[in-house]
Image 1 (tube, rainbow, N blue to C red):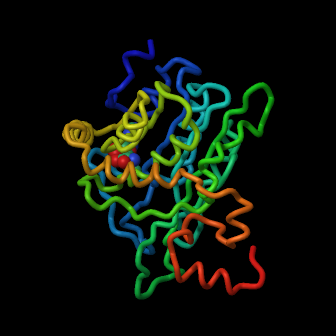
Image 2: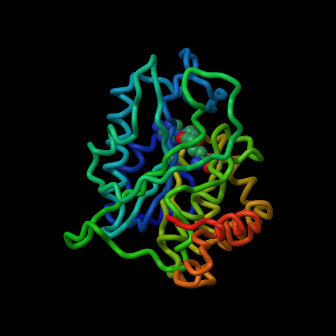
Length: 290
Ligand SMILES: C[S@@+](CC[C@H](N)C(=O)[O-])C[C@H]1O[C@@H](n2cnc3c(N)ncnc32)[C@H](O)[C@@H]1O
């Protein structure tokens, strides 16, 4: 039954399609849904993201109900012990803040971690709030055998923190693509020892999660409402040289060369400082450290 969804993007409404996927046959997932950004409303400081096949504008209650339903369907299709990485952001509508936790708490998922995605973008000249440079990534977890904690991460990921720093993808005609580092980091951190797992993205867009899954030796299930983005993905698949370069850079960050003790002795706590002479000198002169 699952075969008909494997290694393709199925076109349709994600909630409808998810309902037809059998339970507990998927290992993990990553996605970034449309944010209900209502670009025409005053107060948005971001560039317009206009999608090909639908308008990203509905009332907030309907939006959150839909996201809760989608997330609960994902909970059903993912195996116990499985994870889902959900990228979203804090938004304001006429001065009222919507936080992704508002609806994540209504779902069946356990929120295992809130990760800050520092998009490393330049500040604006002026605005109504401090310039929002970050988005959030929620690591959601489906408990297994009444264990809410789950497996430990492998030590090779020990230099990665709860702040993920990479720039948004610019070299892609999709209006809001993932940088390939994002799904790669999520999948590789959880499934580093496995191959041939099944990864789902219910808002697959230009297929970044699919490409990361493929490069890591997994199968994928993609859903998107737009055939145009599916066509973009098909063309992208034919030449993934650029994706591979960034993919390899990301994989190289999942290496720990020194023990924690050695790093502590050198006062080198994070991978970020290891190759940075100025930071090393600065760190060495510090009397106390975190
Ligand atoms: C933020 S984008 C995802 C981009 C993707 N991560 C990538 O790397 O290209 C959201 C996607 O959701 C799709 N979408 C919007 N509403 C949808 C729905 N109801 N069902 C399925 N897909 C939908 C849009 O076409 C868009 O491609």
